[in-house]
Image (cartoon, rainbow, N blue to C red):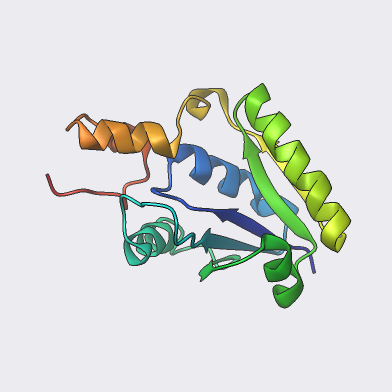
Length: 152
């Protein structure tokens, strides 16, 4: 069974995340979207909202589950018997950052990282851009799945 962990803060999930997840479905038998919890980070959306956004987005996809976790992603992989970490790449800077993490993860736990390039139409979208658009009362809806809605 090929199980992948797709870790992130998903604050909030974007169309870029959704694209990577949908395109990875044929590659894996199971994908666990793992929302990391970092006590030192300030989030725009609560953990419960972030989890709900993702669950609603993929409610009709039986191969996908959503969990929250603290600690190292490699420890989570061991705990869930996952052999792969799934990551999306938008640009060369993402690649350099993710490459270092992938090498470290392989060294720590023999976990392989699978990289998918974002689609051209979503490659400019990041959660930080979405948060900035929301904070400034902009039209964020074109950047996120329908489940992500904010009352202004």
